[in-house]
Structures are given as structure tokens and as C-alpha cells.
Image (tube, rainbow, N blue to C red; front, side, top):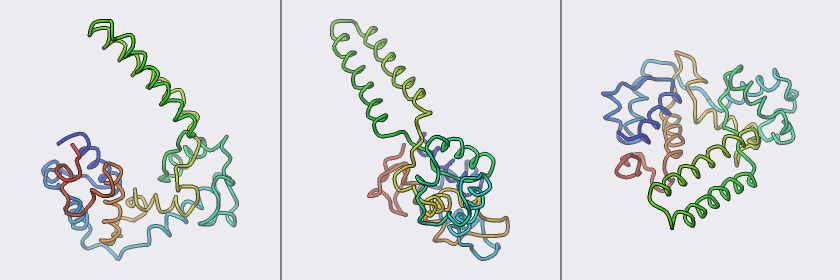
Length: 229
């Protein structure tokens, strides 16, 4: 079982709030099997709930409690960019995630910063190619490690600049949909169950973080069809 598959299984565990035994994990080779397994764990529970509605209500309560906005201003179509200034956005995100238990997408760096980081990596790679052409393999390896180190350091130093909403995640409605799809376990009580459609939607959303849309089918093999290692 490769790293991609292991990380995906961990994402399923976190999203559904379950523990997948190793013996079972080896049998979960397709999305359909994951859906069937999660569904089987919920038998005997009460009827399913509307996850997005519950996520929206909890988001609104958390935003209001942190003083980010008034309750009347927190609507599904509200503009988060206008509601939450960039300067305090990272702090608010941490408070909502750690203190309020809200599941949110990670903030991203501005496009110009991403382009700058890519430029650094390309420049270092070009330098390695020029300098390394007249040296031995050991020097090439050393320069290569230095290049990788520069890229990692630049990425770490630019973390405070990650204060933009990911594409499509700039409204409360979008955040509610993200929470419902990525961590439904945090929205249900111990006696409540998800519908099969809700489970399937979450499995798909989590799987697409590791593969392309055109590779996804519920009967597709994670390794052989989707290319996960």
C-alpha cells in the first residue's frame, strides 16, 4: 500500500470519524467499497440530516461568536472578502478551527507569491544545470539539495502571506458545502447516520484531492485505474 493510498484512507477516517482496521483497509480498493463499508457502520442509526444546513448554522454561530460579523450579515451568498479583512484572516481561521471545531479549507498564497516561488525554483534549477555541467555527480547532488532547500525555505517563509480564500470558497455557502463534504462526522451526532448519497459525495470529494476528475468512478481501482501508489 503506497503513500497516496494510506493518506487517502486517513482522509476517509478523519472525514467520517471512523477507524479502518488494517485487514479492512486492504479490501477497500475502490470508492464503491469504501461507500459500502462506511454505510455498513451506520446501520441502526436514525434518519440522515441535512449536513450543509447544519454546517451553515454552526459556521454562522462561530463567526458571530468571534466577532467577525453580525448574524444578519452572514448569509449564504455574502462576500467573505468584504466580511473578513485580510490582516486578521489567518488569526480568525485558527480560532475557528482550533477553538470552535469548524472545518475550513486552508488559506492560500496570492498568485504573485506562487509565481515568485516557482521562479526561484526554476532559477536555482537553471543554476544547477549550468554549474553542474562542468562538475562531478557529487557537486550536482549538492547543488540540487541546495535548490530543494531554498524552495522549502521560501515556502515556509511565505506562509504568513497565505491569507486568500481558495478559488470558489469566498462565500459562507461554499464553506458550508466544504465542511459537509470533507468532515461530515463533525456535523452528526452519535445516533445519526448519513445517507448513502452523502457518503458517496464525501468519498468522491476526498478522492478527487488525490486524482483527476476523469479518473474517478465508483468502481475504479484506486491504484490500477486512478494511478494512486
